[in-house]
Image (cartoon, rainbow, N blue to C red; front, side, top):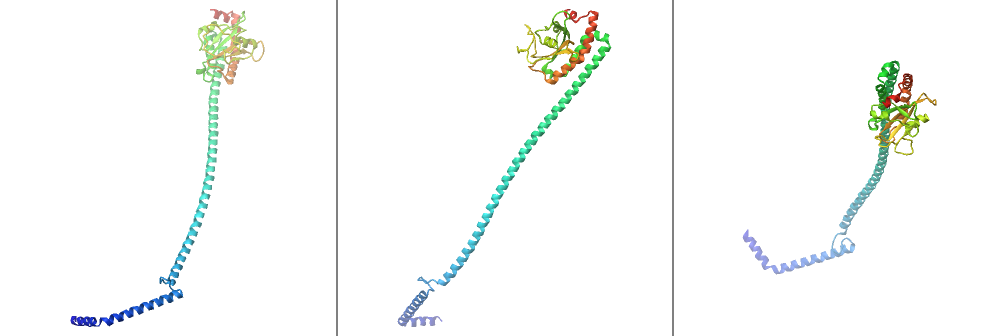
Length: 326
């Protein structure tokens, strides 16, 4: 086999001259044919000058155009979705604003209702406190009326314990004043001096010292004297105000700025005033209208007892002035 191959190569080598020439012609003819075919296809528009097949390019372009159209359609759909989402976003924002307005309005209503509830609560507490205060005041009035009735019936017991009984009665009045610990109300009763133009001590509450017995308010020039003189209530919200009639004593130890003077009389008849109930208070303008009305009520309650006692003492010659002088 090897020997045959070697022989073939030797034959080809011997005849290589004509074979190479033949091969050259064949290659040249092939090139000419290819050039002719290229020119023909180029002339007919099937190829471009580079020899590329235009039909395949057109098919590829068509595929690309189809893909572009699909991409464009998808892009249009996405843009529509974006527009819809934007509209939904705007609608949601508007809805959020509406809800925020509703929430703000609701908060205002809640705040208003809260204020109304607080107002009602304060009103309720005020009414509750007022009820408690009125109930307590009524109990003090009942104690006063009961003790006055007992004193009128038991004359001997009253005569022996006059000062203590009146001290209790005036303390009942003190207990009816609101915030009496801060106001420090002190009560004293003065009656007309039988001969001189002044008032004299008759009774006082537990807040006073014994020295109060020796002060005699003048009929003219003192708050108690004006109440006695005019038969009308006289309220001085500030004793340091010179516009009011008040006996400004030298070296006075007064610890009050307010004084309320109520005439002790039978109803509204003139000339029936037998004394004056004076109530002092530590702060300026210490007493409210309701407290002044309570003082007037107590003055009316104790009138019968004082009236009976003064008449009895006049009969026996035991005038209040003699006690104060002693």
